[in-house]
Image (tube, rainbow, N blue to C red):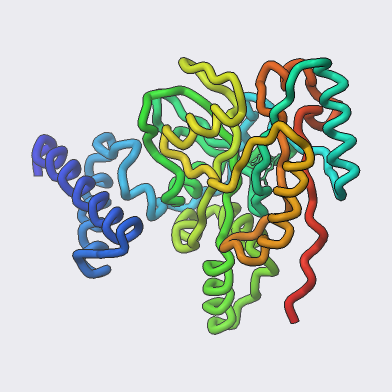
Length: 319
Ligand SMILES: NC(=O)c1cnc(N)c2cc(Br)sc12
């Protein structure tokens, strides 16, 4: 096949596969069988193998994973990935609020409260709207390059809706349902079981063979901007809205609060509702919304003064 024909065929196959992905994953109304879908993917991968420079950086073939890596490269994060101070009760949250208000003086303070997803923290780097590198948190400064594994997660966009250069942070996780299904399959194969969804997500993403990550139902919630070129946002909630517009999966259970009592009621509410979520959370994250106030508050040696993690008490084991 000549190059021009191959280029046309690759574009046509990618378009068809993306349409069937949407029909299957988003609309739950597949039009072709798994075998027919696999055949389309085989044709695309064969052409991309014959003409590697014709593989688009957002090709659907990247979702199934390529060859295993010999090892993971190290990645230095553009800005360090945070670790958060912890709060364990209402008084700790009120102390946090008092410290914040003392530091910002008479200014009004708005908080954003979000669910603290129990998964594996990841950093995703995009250049001109294309996903180019993804890494684990590691020690907060240096992580492992798990780009090929992350490209198999469908909720991670390979191409953003705008050609921006930015670095975002989030959590890769496995839902409770996917975790139960995976462990059932492993039990039937006589394999060791994963202890919990977080371990299974971390274990899946730290495999050198990306086909393993591709075979696991992993998902993401993106919750932070590490570096942003070409756009300005003034607050964390505005940043989350931008992330959603760009095509990232941003958790909907977020709320802004101007009053600490309402914030505490929201936290109490999720303590009750937590077992009914389809994914595991281990607490709530409360952040000062205004970036200007975050700047003013700064960091301690370990973590930001403008955020705190409220940790839920350990869930009683379900007997
Ligand atoms: N929404 C958030 O900020 C959030 C959610 N889930 C998490 N596991 C974490 C961890 C840090 Br550090 S922030 C954060």
